[in-house]
Length: 116
Image (cartoon, rainbow, N blue to C red):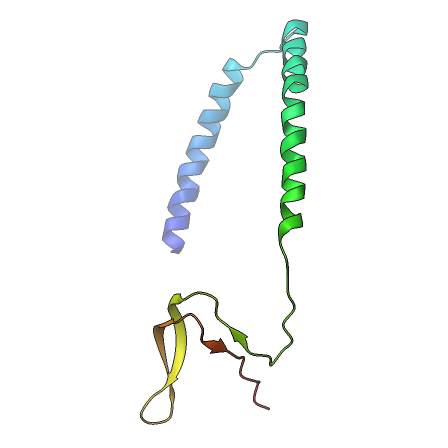
């Protein structure tokens, strides 16, 4: 990995001065451009109304959701099937084994309290 960084550093040390020289040749001081400024102002005024409407809709979108607090240790019932849920199951030797399964609609879920 270190050799890759050294190669990248060497390439950048060569490219940066070349890019800097090429950009200096193209740079010029721009004079005032009142017509461009007015076109940009008109565009901002034209689109400001649409942006304000979108912003209001985004703010109102959160008003329709409902959050329910479920206290720790309370069971909940699944409303829809959860596909390929990552689960721990007990193996034949009594040790937990990682696996995946579908949790069907209607099953109850309950958090296991932490062992002390």
